[in-house]
Length: 151
Image (cartoon, rainbow, N blue to C red):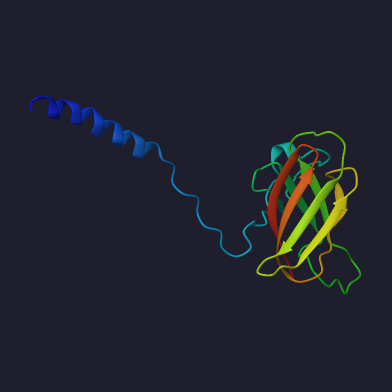
């Protein structure tokens, strides 16, 4: 009987440590989950910009790529004849190859595939309908995801 308290104290102490080390769950996404940031681009994405690098952009969920948005807001039906221009900037260099964009319209089964020849860089990203599009981005040795909202 005297050994019982000695054995329980280390076990209870370890149980407390285990709970403290468990990370909190990630917050749930609501709406179109990747917000457009109008501030400075991440430092690694500023090549080619002079002066301020503030521009509308969306950072990938993994932080591997940023979409710099030109012609905001992105629009599904561009009656003005303009296109939705996106500059894709990857955080790390990769072997040469295409950037493949698989887009899925939130709440539907509608998909669209676009390819940026030569990998991350300038592109036209016109998608067929308004709504929140979830993009899976794949380029040699890398991938990331982000959401873009189209009017």
